[in-house]
Image (cartoon, rainbow, N blue to C red; front, side, top):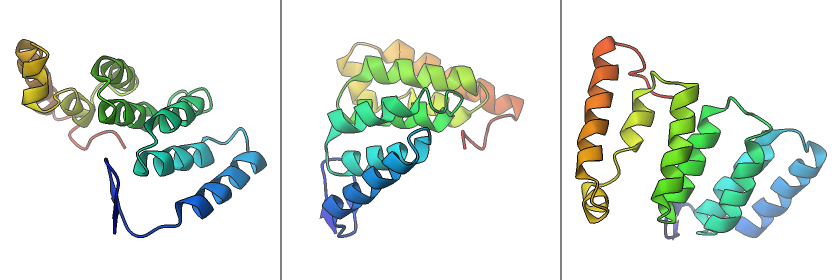
Length: 143
């Protein structure tokens, strides 16, 4: 197993995988799939800037793709860019407002919120999640 700063992966040939994803990207430039996979590959290696750039390229290709915004947020969170991650998550919530899972991701580790002086926002976020769950919609998340 290889461990990057963000993801544990089985032993993979990242360089060979990148070559294959780049080939797929060239064959289907309007398809978000190869770019999405390439972004994950970069994130697994801790290449967050490249992962972010590629993930952002998927957004206009699949503008209603909630998972595109969700994964962009995860990359930004891994890089400590919480305000930008929050904006990406809010876009995902705009696209799928009943997804409790998206609301839950707005509640990063309490110590992070405490350091940023935003404990009240954490509480408000928890209340939003409970409200979504009480309605019985979106409990399955954003898939």
